[in-house]
Length: 436
Image (cartoon, rainbow, N blue to C red; front, side, top):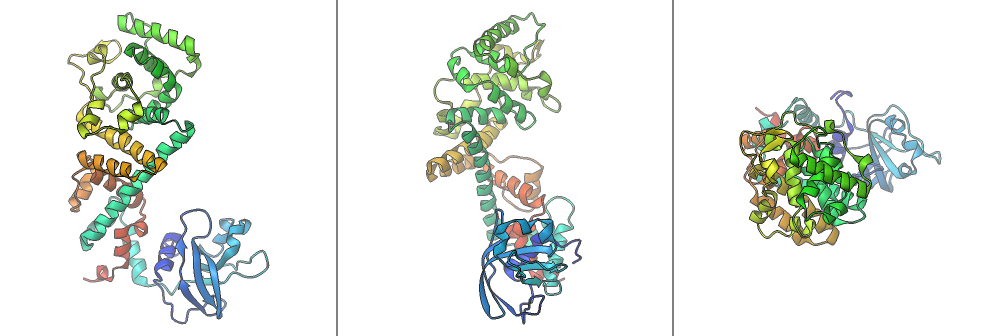
């Protein structure tokens, strides 16, 4: 493998599993070295492997291992300025083009792997990296036992839940540990259904939850606050409903001094959306949901059945918005309430992450079980990624399956992190792939 194709990922993989010739191993200054423990891969800042153990020139060393393609990358990454790297006991590289000296004047032993690595491992890795798009191992996927595939499926599902829960916890901390405010903003963000996620989140941050709570008994006031802060109430309409919104919004902005925070209408996107998904319709549906009595957080997290959850999101918007997709233009047909597919996405993207985050914050694993159960009760998403996996024989029956497969594709396949993938790692290690 050329230096151009070599990278730290494959070198770390080779070091971790010792896919190189360890017979009569020597450092680059011709000193014997034996590997007792390769160490634990470090996912955080600092040397690549910690708690390693090696014998160099009959002396036992315990500490960190650093991996680089070239030894001079040490300086490219400015490790010489970081005291954490003073504890490196062995520098493992592909090519040694510069000695590395510690601050105390001693040289860090360097082990060059070029010429020592199992060529078959490099070739298999190159095979996966050469696939330009899609799932890199698609042509070899059937080589892998189901037990390994579904172990990876479970792993990526938990990874996705942890990542989304982390996003919720970030909001929670920014909201001074207020679950109600966090639930409001998290719900608002996902009412944007990707295209308007950012705009909806921004709206819920400038239209304060405390004001929503105070005025939730009058739906028109919630609508006035949301549409007004969104910058969407027309100035030149004589419709009674619009005039009422303007009046209520003027009252609310005057009372709570919100005028300077109003969004611009151009921040909302309509292109490529069906009319039922227009932000105006979604805002009306959000307003209706927020007008319900009781705790919003408990409403979303304490449902007893998937039917209860779907009913929360399926409520019909106010009368004006059953006849209009946008202000001032009456629709020919009745505007529907939120559909089953959209409700299912809100269960997946709102309720489940809230439950997982709450589970972690309260250290109540039964809430995590409940979140996974909700995913198992929602039908799988049908998109290009899930269809690609289905052609490889992977089950795509529930949202738990589709969420895991989406995470697998986005975080491993599309980024070509094959070595961090259970399936990819096995394929790189399997010699049978090179046999006819």
